[in-house]
Image 1 (cartoon, rainbow, N blue to C red):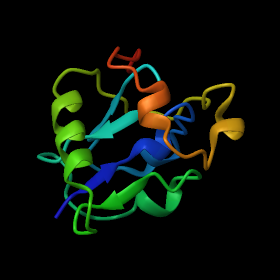
Image 2: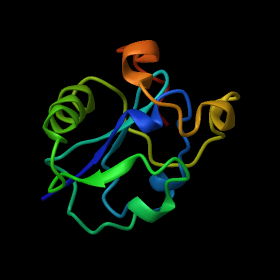
Image 3: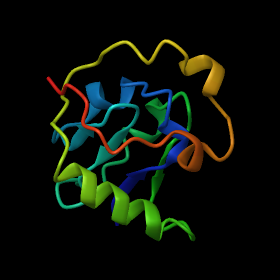
Length: 112
């Protein structure tokens, strides 16, 4: 098992999860974070820290696409290990449906 970041993170990018991760397995895109599934130790401390409820265990059904996306982009995007401010419009987009099709960006973020 590993944890994955879903589209609930898109356009929010809260980084509370990054602060608590003991193995620094988060990677930053332009408008979301992903978890490297090979580095995640399945501790689960990140899941309750996410205000957008975007982090889920991959054992939940229907998360295969998110596991693939997290694996792909964690290999391309820079590592992030310290908390930053969320995106300015984060609270407006929190809980919005269909964010992947509307807003996903494959561009990398800044990282640390």
